[in-house]
Image 1 (cartoon, chains in turn blue, red):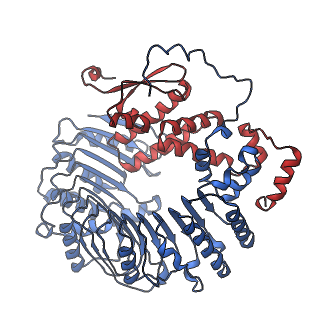
Image 2 (image 1 turned 60 degrees about the horizontal axis):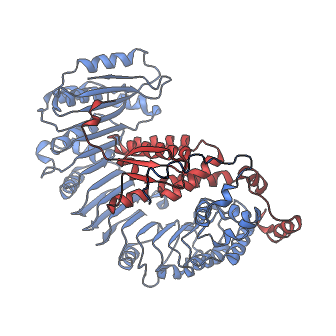
Image 3 (image 1 turned 90 degrees about the vertical axis):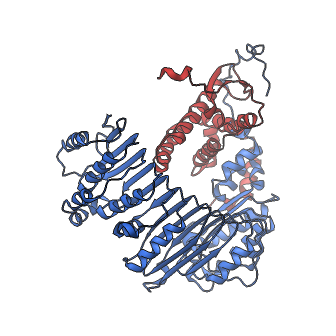
Amino acid sequence: MENDFPSDFELYESQELNSSEPLDRLSELPDSVVHFIFSFLPMDYVVRTTILSKRWKDLWTFVPYIYFQPKEGELDKFTNFVNRTLMLWKGKKIQKFTIDFKDVYEPSSCTDLNLWVRFALEHEVEELDLDYFFVTLDDRYWMTQRLFSGSSIKKLRIMDCNMEVSGKIHWDQLKSLTINTVRWGQDEIDKVLSGSPQLEILIMYTSEKMSIHSGSLKKLFIHFDLHNHFGEEIDSALEIWTPNLQVLEISGRLYCKFFLQVNVPSLVEATLHFSTPGYDDLEMVMVRDFFQSIHHVEKLSLGSHFIKELSAMEKNDLPSPPLNLKRLSVDTYIGKDVLAGILNLLEISPDLSILEIMDLRSYEDGSEFFCRNVGGNFKSQLELRDSFNMRLKTVTITWYVDSTSMFSFIEFVLKNASKLEKMVIQAKPIDSHPPDLFFEIAQKLLRMPRSSPNAEVVLRRLYSEDDSSSIDYS
Amino acid sequence: MSSSTELTEKKVFLLKSLDGVIFEVEESVAVQLEVIRELIEGDCARPFISLYNVTSEILALVIEYCKHHAETCSGGTSATIADEDLKTFDNEFMNVDENILLELCSAADYLDIKSLFELTCRTLASLIKDRTIIEVRKMFNVENDFSVVEEKAVRKEFAWAFK
């Protein structure tokens, strides 16, 4: 880059665009840019640009991003369209190949689908995205075995496919895999992990017992999805043995017992958003052991499950050694059990400086929720509690103003967090509340004693006509 | 505005547009331009950088975009709130006419700003989608240089792609 200031300063000053003749800037874009624009469009639109002008006639035939999306009830037409398009395609390598099959599948398309996948693999496809919605439940569908020797693939997403792996898998370059296939057992998972030596990101939908051993994995997302089990009650178990894993997320719904065992010495961030039907002593031990094995984690995001169990623990049952947490996010229905769990976590996390609480209850849940939490028990519970020093610096709370437990919680935090710099409270009002309730809250907040002299407290009202109203005081 | 800006030394870059207008940007904004980030990392960045392919009108918009993204990402707000905020900003930012949009796209490509490049390309794609070829020609001033006979022939050959 030249750096010739100020000599050339005047040179461009008088340049002005000639506005009398409209410019065709679209056609002036370099091929690579036009191709990238094409990457957001299904091929139906891309092929049609062939008649825009001579510049465009062959432009589409080299596009390295190929994306097919059939319309409902037009399967034959779609099959013809894909076959003709691929026949005319003149590129060398495919960067991304997507088939978003949705609900037009018929067993007869299986052969065509597999030929298209082969086409992509023969052209050294790097990113392959196959969404075969509804194919899963059809036993007549089979996935070409050629997929498992697709050594050019770096990113692979397969949704709702029914596949069997007859031999070994050779995904030498695979970095990221998203897979949702219900009939896979431990055998297939082992084949995937041993056949993908560079796999860093794994996103799995599963329903059963699973054990994951991998030296390369850095991010792991597991979603428990039981919709294919038709009410069958099954236990789930998860064993994770991944020395280089940095991010772990477990979500979904579990029907019966859940066993979780992890060995993740490099983990930095964990998200646990799943629900199970209830909890008992056995599970409490599992939760404590789990927290002990992730005590080095810095960022933690929790749904209701684990945090409720934590709230039920007595002080000497709490996980030790202390957690290394710096940031904690909780989004769930916030009741007093959850708040008690958060306080337990605060007590065993001496370095926790950022806390975010989001009440996910929808408006309809309101009344029922309120009934369950009636009574000022939480306040008296808090009064019994030993105060402890919190290192909290930033706290963000979003909640419905009818939760009195939250009020007591805020009071407790303000009293004990001596390093607090900022607390943002976003209050969601409920229609039946008197209009001046907001100011009542503000006054109450003002009166609460604080141990941090410089703390700034911001109160915001959410989802009302006057959305911007906020009171800011220190 | 705080008066302490003079005391805390923030690295500042001067960017000069094609038409000679000079913009002062902080490092946090400048590094979002991949071309400049590479210069900074290679330690070859001089405080004054001429950008020959971008007009002042477009450069001002690009800097506004980078500034907002830099501020939103560095603030202490939670990731979900920041995401929402960026989405709203991006949507409004894309509310410009087609010519500006195309120039922003070229600028993002030239300056190598990945997120802006993707945003503009995605927006352009959405403008092309669900429009007929004639409408696309009109919208972007694409000159149809096919003769009537030529166009008829291409249309005939590609009839399968049009319904």
